[in-house]
Length: 162
Image (cartoon, rainbow, N blue to C red; front, side, top):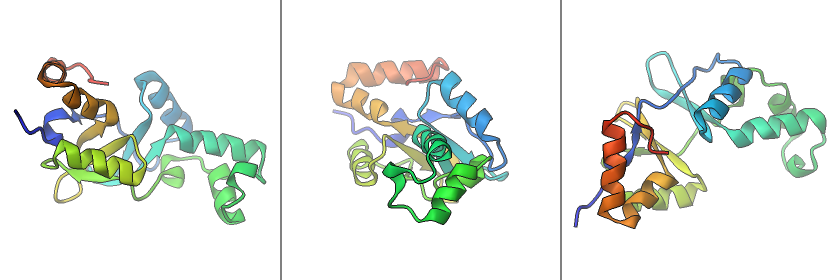
């Protein structure tokens, strides 16, 4: 039985944004790309953070209800910063869950669970983004070799495995 690594199942060259990308553009990328989050990269290609659908929804909710019953646990300054954010850099999670490409699929699943995340950013030793691996990518491996091989064929053909 093959022991899959994150590099075997990741989506290479995912859609990305920069810290200066307007949030309207981020929302458009998420909707059009049918993805739940987008990595935010520095000009050197290093991971600066990630903006997820939930971040944009929280911003909308705080704009409508600044006291935010669901966000009352956050200090006022943080709620204000979220509500007034206009760019990816102002809203992004600065410490997203990451994994090196040689991480086993089982360890990637544990990392996602520990970080309560549905994805991991796959990075090189110098912090550059190599790709993204989602919970769905991992599930394909657990379904068996046929599903994992199909995902590999899709990637090789240029199709997104999501």
